[in-house]
Image (cartoon, rainbow, N blue to C red; front, side, top):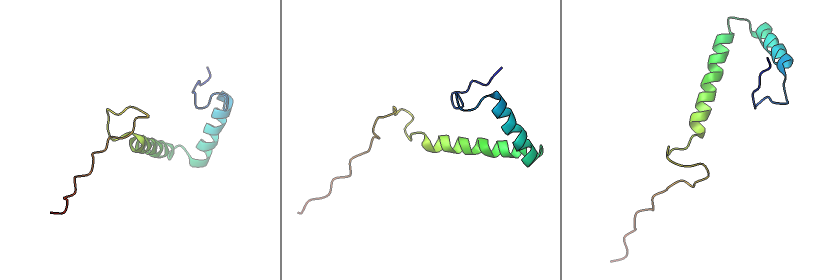
Length: 76
């Protein structure tokens, strides 16, 4: 059973991913892996939050809605 992620399609196979996992486990140890995964998850969450549009109803590619500036008083 191979991982079929569109991110790694054609770049990394199952053997390469296992090798990377073993190297990470050897470098950081089993006790630090949960904190590393938690930090990675939080950073992905923050990235998605920052890249999301401010207006939840906005469609991708649609310019942001801005309000016109208030009228300036003319000379009286």
